Image (tube, rainbow, N blue to C red; front, side, top):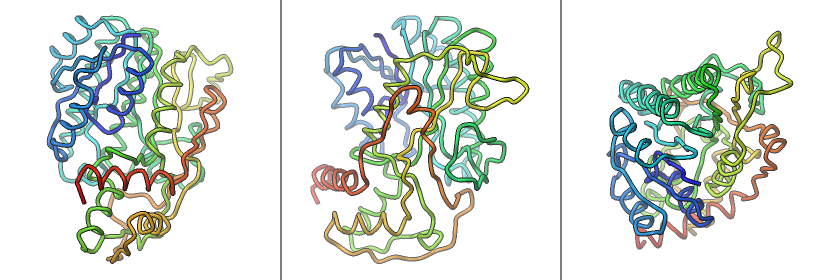
Length: 335
């Protein structure tokens, strides 16, 4: 297939693109390589893709409507994976407008391009952050998600609503994937595993919020990519079991689905740090701090809907995933 991947120089996007190329798909990568975190890491991910048969790349902003339209018109993708977004919960407190520009305006440009240039299936990144103030665990796609606690989360919830509208009005099959704390080789420097590894190796203390007592459904990047591909290959149709008298956010009479992708095994942050210490062979000096604004105490993915529809089962324990990350980190940074 011909697949357009936005955010192709990103953590998940670059890993996904390698997998798609390996199975013989043609991929057009679309990314602006912004400086939200170190662009040299994005350039290094992209360099590994450049020159691979079937890969082409466009450097542009999602907010650039003409650039998005041109990419669709010239490449003519069969399917689209929209991963590019302004990421980060904490940064959304400092720079809220970046989230509207990229995650709302940029996503609208993708939807409009899918509408006008044709698209068999749009798969897009949502986030576990949409569960916000919810406390019922595990988080299930059937749960109401109307209480976000960060603008980042609100923008991802808005993406789901926008996608549903286009599925309903124009019959575009769309699938939203709520990712749960993704980690692994080539990961993001703003995420805990990366920050902790850098500081522990440098002999610096690490900031541990909520005194390390919150839990996360840490999900290894290869498991995430497996779930993305399984959903990409299965465009949704209208849900025959959908009951408008008892609506669910997960499906619709339109060709629309939302799924969780997580490890289905939450781990307390203090345990995660122990696993990292074992992999590094060093102890961390911890600075225990209260919860940060915009954070949630716990995440835990109910992935039963994704398992039912695609056969997806996460298979990477944190001990394996963290060790793989540390090996990559030491090799990449020569430490």
